Length: 85
Image (cartoon, rainbow, N blue to C red; front, side, top):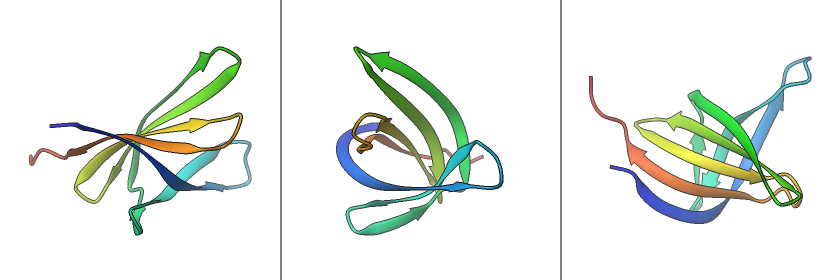
């Protein structure tokens, strides 16, 4: 079950000789979470601010991260356990 979090996190991106950046890890509550899979990406405008939303998998958890492109602050919006196969 997903839990609303809404806490700021530090997000690290990587580029590989292309114009696309991809999140590779984030820090939440002093713990580093390596992003294993980018499950979904979308963006939206709220007024004049563009937000980038990443749904990612790390270890046995799913996270939804929102990046404000104006001030570059990243928020962890939700966290959920991954269901076993």
